[in-house]
Length: 254
Ligand code: PGA
Image (cartoon, rainbow, N blue to C red):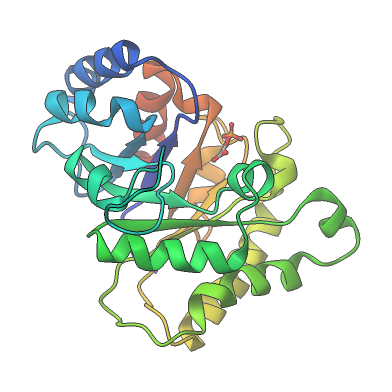
């Protein structure tokens, strides 16, 4: 599927507001003159606290911002919660939903993930839904069943075709471990997921990302897979050099 590669930097709970803002300030000059934003789309997901400060530096430019989570609803008596509307106002245009760290440490279920996808759409945000099997699930041959369960929570309800959606396949055992999934396995899984998407009632034109220990050296191999349209990158996206190198690799694939 001919979609321009999409790179999303997931900064997790790293970088202060000051560091994030300074990254946003320095990024533009490093990309200027050679980056073609229509060819490679770049999104950064800082902590929610840093969205506003980064948005001030990035302005209406081509680098988009994403939140790493949202809570349901618009406003209300929900101490500590941030709604999609607040995140959108702070500058986010996408939101990561159902990351394995949220599923694991914050007990997010498939049902809640589906509700958050609706909440994202209601707030005008593009949901980036993460799915992936644990090592035990992989070893017991359950990868497809797990992915099907996680995806069917969001794909079985009838939805408008024009609702934007991004799916990130992130094998849990490959996240932050340096243990990258084999490109041929990712290619096979991406192909299966693409087939489910084409027969589901949900949106069809869905960028499918790979995530899990992606870095500038292995990114090209994933982007060459016909059913993979980009990457969700954690650790390797924390430095300016890492992000610039990955935009360059992605642009060379086109
Ligand atoms: P990693 O993280 O690139 O550090 O493995 C990816 C992610 O958690 O999205």
